[in-house]
Image (cartoon, rainbow, N blue to C red; front, side, top):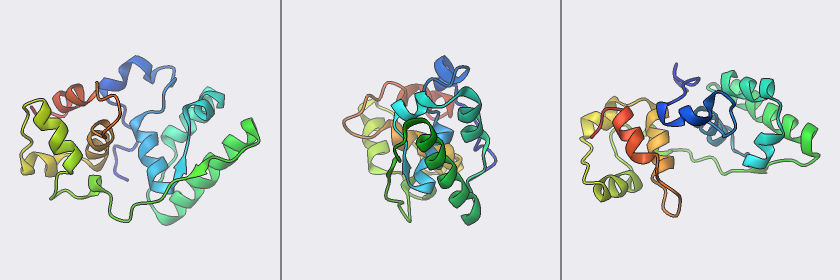
Length: 154
């Protein structure tokens, strides 16, 4: 992960103070360590535990393993159930600075926005992750345009 792993985006501003929703920085880490954390699990966590998941490092192999163990432990403590595993993509689209994901291109085209390859490459992995997640088919994509604007792309 990069130095922006504790970043909150402006499009998340309506819930960041209370952490009532899972911020993109945590979702990035969950995808990295292969844990599916449901919103109902997140709501069971105390605010200091949520803040710990925001700030805990998840970049090196050891940090990723520790983060996975922490998430699973916290969910178990509150629910007596373990969260499901997520498959870990060995080459996720947000780490491909030279290739804009198809979902992002399609969602951008629907908004008549063209993302230049150099602009995509200039984004941080967390920013690219956010755009990838916000452009997935079958999901509400209301924050996609605000994210594009926040990242200086339209």
